[in-house]
Length: 91
Image (tube, rainbow, N blue to C red):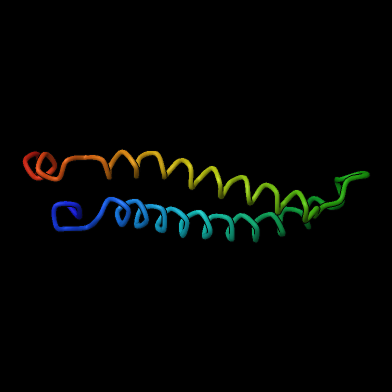
């Protein structure tokens, strides 16, 4: 619909990626808070392993963020390639 109203294909892809990035960052923040609580609760059951390894948490966060962006880029690119007239006819 945005393409039919004059948006460029790049703008459509950017819009979808911004929304996906925002959702991924919110999910990572919630997961980080949850991992802090679970790490503290499990500290007594862990032997020889640190409850909070920030290098691992950072690496997993970057990996999840990259995966979320890649998973949203592929459908965004496909949506941007749709002919606007075909989209308007099917609506």
